[in-house]
Amino acid sequence: MVDIKCGECLDDIPGVDDDAQGFLCLNCDRDYDLWLCTSCESVTQVWPAGEAACQWCLSRIRLRGFSHGQRATAAEWRDELEERGLLHAGREDVLVGGFRLLGGSGINVETGAICSVLTLPDALDVRAEVGGIGIATIPYEEITALDIAGSATTRDGGFIGGGFGFGGAAEGMLVASMLNSLTRKTSIDTGLAIQTARGELLLNHARITPQELRRRLSPLFTRVNAARKTTTGGRAADDPVSQLERLAELHKKGLLSAEEFEAARRREVQRLTGDSP
Image: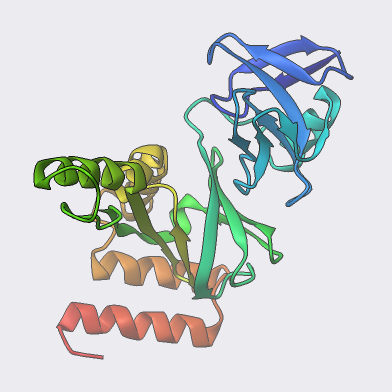
């Protein structure tokens, strides 16, 4: 028997048979199946309701009853959670998979990879899942800026009334309206920028709107703000004076090289004096 967690709400699920291929989460009120994702090779939980996706990389797992992958066990699920640091996570922690890393600097995650973003109790974990390698575990006190931006644009098929059917103009307009509703598509382009004193990550999501991503990552913003207040003694974390003090402390601890410290210090001095770069 193993004690595991629900990967959706992080509720504890005690006493599950090692070889069980699923479990019931009373908090989510869902009966989950366990699968091995063939794309990222991670164990993932799937709500067996038609189409579903791997929670780490969002690759398709099931579609209309046809399986894409192989079943996993509760013992393998527990090993997956332990390796990712989730066994000690709480309900405030959140996981969002399916990001693509567009670029960045100073952090060891490969550009172009599909990544997951996980809020652990004391740090943010950004992990390459498909198409690259690398894991960045960023303590909240090291995050200097977070930004979510983007848009969700809905377009239809562009059909107009008239045409060459048997009906008149009114019928043609009605048919065009029906065709447009059936072909309507929403294009989502959401960006997440994570900046630290040592570098930054630029991530993109094509399935979650900026508003929804901000809602999901609310614990991340809360923890970063709390870490800023603790580090700066209550002053605004984006205050250039506070940032200079933090940079000096990071340099003193050996977390910033002399070159990194000088480049970051110069940026903050420019902010303080109002000079252009």
